[in-house]
Image (tube, rainbow, N blue to C red):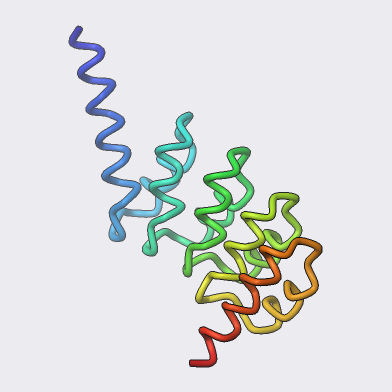
Length: 130
């Protein structure tokens, strides 16, 4: 019984670290390597996450983690570019909606095969111009 409580506490601590914008990078890496995608999402969604950690999460095996990382304004441009090649339209759409996505990337996404991605790119361009 005590082990279960320790495990729950561990997940709670991991989650709190993942969401903390001031968490040290070495702790962000530990949460980004967690077995649970729920923990990795906490770091992927954190605007204070380190760029190199977000780059790793943008290549995660879990589509939700990739999608959240692709929408994070702190994801470096190289990660945004990589995510435009993702087979999942939700990831490409998240790049188009990301406020940090350069205009050139959004312009390229206007030609995506998927209408959701094209609309997201058009809305991203419009929103950035306001």
